[in-house]
Length: 525
Ligand code: G4P
Image (cartoon, rainbow, N blue to C red):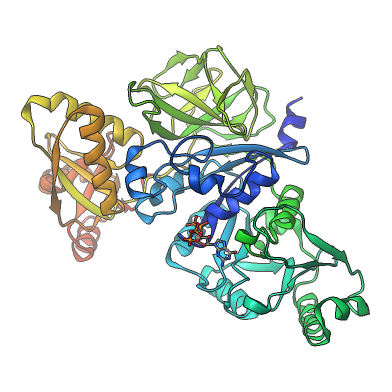
């Protein structure tokens, strides 16, 4: 039973540098899946409601996709769970966490801009767990970089081995379409924003004069040369190497024109990995194990501002999740059950009776969950691989309204449980330092503390370079913590963290304390 359910599912995310076309591609995929009916729905609804939405007022104000949401839809009998990620770099941690819950990604690259800053970081995170990647080179309707140069740039800059499965015929105004290398067909370009039809002509023999007829002699000649070269260099795609995260298939197209998207999707459901197992601190969990396990990778606050409810996003890892059934919340050792778990199918959030590996379930939470929490049928273990990275910016939290101290404490605790930012509390003291990736996060925190908890705060900038989780000899750590009292903090789980003022200080401490290890992430082997 489970095997069948598992084989039907694909859980993935689309990642890109902002503006490369992630939202546009998402929308086109949803159109194919029948999850939305008209083009433009995603953009215009980005903030208001429904699948792609983001409920926070702050997003409306800023037009930035702050939160991660989930869109589930069916396409040709495959159940696709698409996890959306915020494009803005200040929310990169949110994206990294979401990537722990997917089995593969589609990476969108703008053919004009090539590899950009966020692209590099995202691919690095994918590489940490060998997540399979399919590349979609977008905006072929514009004059971009030459395809061979682009491939070269992507391979070099991202240290990815590529395998083109389609090849463009010109670009910009001259863009005529793509030739599919895997099924030897010509896909003619028509600027087309609405329909999902494509103009595909099978040309099994690239020397067929039909090609000259359709794209002209000059372009047909060039294409033949290119294809010969490509076939010589790449040969056939080794799907296993893709699944192992060693080679990335590449497609070319234009998302806004809905061109090249269908073949991307068709290939995706054919080759993309089914839900995969995950590591825990005790053992590796396989998806086809009979007992249910899952972990929380995202917590979203206040769907309804009148209530302080949160939604915890659970990725099912094994077995079958059922409504109204008691599961073990392994961190706190309590049994919990959920009467209204919901899925993110199509346009509505539906209460569900059951869910299977690869699915993402929304659980109402009144403050019991933290990112990384694990649910099981009783086995005590914790899913790993959801590391916290050292923040880039540190500021001290200052309470501006002593009458609201309690609200502030609660608010900051809950917001950091959600993963909005990292909270470091002075070891043996009460100073609170907030660590974020970008300035915008501080504004979000300040805004939310006021709106949701009625607490007003300010942030005092601190000039720390990195947060380092410290491990090693107990006595050495005790001594170090005593000498460096002002720089020693505890993270949300009580782990000791050293805040280094500069790289020089960190290197000096490393040299002076050989019995202590300094880590830039909260997870280490
Ligand atoms: P993001 O989510 O990765 O940030 O990118 P998004 O889809 O919002 O796309 C960024 C811009 O690129 C949008 O234009 C979008 O229309 C455009 N775009 C997406 N795909 C293509 C394509 O294939 N060709 C061309 N030429 N443009 C494309 P915008 O002006 O920022 O927004 P809009 O007013 O057009 O919606």
